[in-house]
Length: 180
Image 1 (spheres, rainbow, N blue to C red):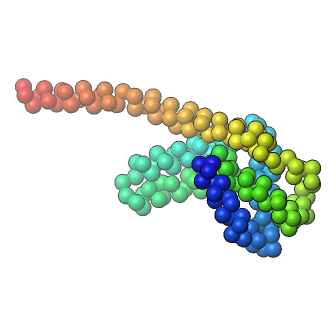
Image 2 (cartoon, helix red, strand yellow; image 1 turned 60 degrees about the vertical axis):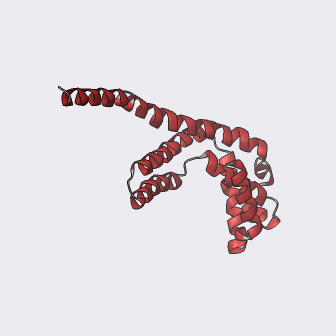
Image 3 (cartoon, rainbow, N blue to C red; image 1 turned 180 degrees about the horizontal axis):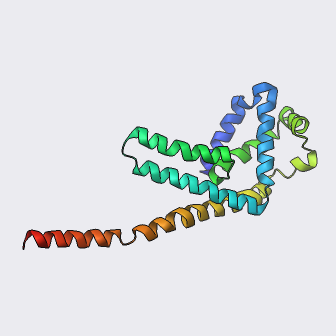
């Protein structure tokens, strides 16, 4: 995921897409990355839990859907909720934060971010790989794991752990009735 996100970051940066609105999009990328890197550890962790509950529900519902339209709707709404809610996802942040860090190399984007969002040189200096890993990637990844495992995986396991045993016993009883 990190390699793929890095390739997309470089392609987007050099495509000129961040020049939209005279560099405002590049400035916004910096602002988003700065905000994510400076989240409180507990806020990043809990936001990541909420995010992955929605992401895992989307995957589960898409897997359960029987046709393409159902799969599209199953994925769309939970992912929409996670994006609109501003929740943290480690893989999404593998794009958002590096694009902001790379955008700091463009003086137009950097100056626009300082002007539009009131960011200072000192604040922007916190937008670096070390802070990205320690203050975002680590707590968000752990939160995503907890959200998916504790709130989706474990409950599903508990609900369905005896399902195979019940089905096997039911099949054995059915076969026994057929031959009696």
